[in-house]
Amino acid sequence: MLDVTISEVIEATGATLLCGSGEARITGVTCDSRTAAPGLAFACFRGERVDGNRFAPSAVDGGATAVVLTTDPDEGLLEQARAKGCALLRAACVGGETPDDTDPDATEFLLRLAGFWRRRNPQWIVVGVTGSVGKTTTKDMLAAGLSASFKTHATKGNFNNLMGLPLTLLAADATDEVVVAEMGMNHAGELARLTQVALPTVALVTNVGTSHIGFLGSRENIARAKAEIVGGMTASDEATGPVRPCLVLTDDNDFGTFIEREFCEPAGVEVVWTGLSEKSAVRAENLVLDGEGKPCFTVSCADGWSHELTLDAPGRHVVADFLLAMAIVWRVGGSREAAAEAIAHMPQTHMRLEILSAPGRARVIDDSYNASPSSMAAALDVLCSMTCTGRRVAVLGQVGELGDEARAFAERVMRETEGFEE
Image (cartoon, rainbow, N blue to C red):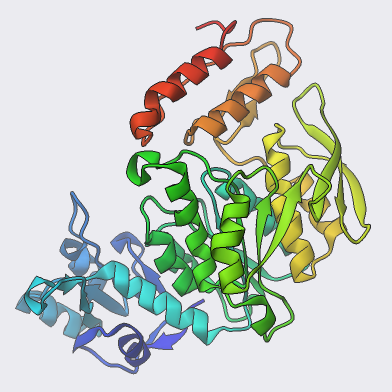
């Protein structure tokens, strides 16, 4: 976990100390005043509906060692903080074209502090995980597989944005060997900010789909945005540690060659391919689904290693996630046998193709956490592949952020669901 003095926090982030001692130590950061406690710094975010600065007094009462404000405190808060021995800081002002336009920025505070902590721990093997869909599943597989060989810290849930990624890094301990960092984005430039903080040793792109196409305009723009992850990586021939940097891509990614040519080659970052084709360094062979929709196959690597297994998670699409995870395990020197078995039998992720059943009742495939065109297609594939003695019913929700592609997607889903009961 984080272990720094307030003076180091100030030096790393450019924050201003308003009251309190710079010698006090911070062992973590929270953005929820209800979890404020000794050793923690509470960062006040201004949301669309709630201003975190309003909860500064409760964080002080909760025993927070420091509170990072994005506004000027009143005298009442200053007196309260002095009485409680809580340091008050004001985040640095960033983002404006002129000094009068700038505001204290809690997001930038977190990013700068997380970047400082990452650079304080260069021994970490950081695995960056991005892509349109499958990030969380792949991240969970990586955490399970790498934990079989290393002391591993991973993103909780889907804390993968400009707030979540810094919190993931700040929660990692200096004794951790591997940090698995899920990295998401909605707009161009967001992943560039995250990768400069995380500095991935190795990374992967699950796929380039249509998520956020309403914001980015085209799949090529989505590919460019995902490929920003390369910007924080060291060139493969400049690596000083035992792990050579690389970006892992799937062989069915129609933008894979584009990412390799336009981003990886100029940066000197090697590409490792995974999938079903012979060119892939990590591939699946003899893939079939059993009556429960579970994939059975042989995973093999270019060095001749192979392993037969059945994944507890249903669906063909999870094989792609599995291969990405196995490529990373191989690349960083973990036990592939132990990783494969750990991933094969890891618990199902709640609301992500989670199969619920009870004697005498219908089985329910709960994939309601989020939706995209490719994830919905994968869920329908699982529904069709499972043994069924009655009717198959698909209950479909709305998919957002598709922009001009929304109608085409709706028509595609209608074609794929012909024959289902509404």
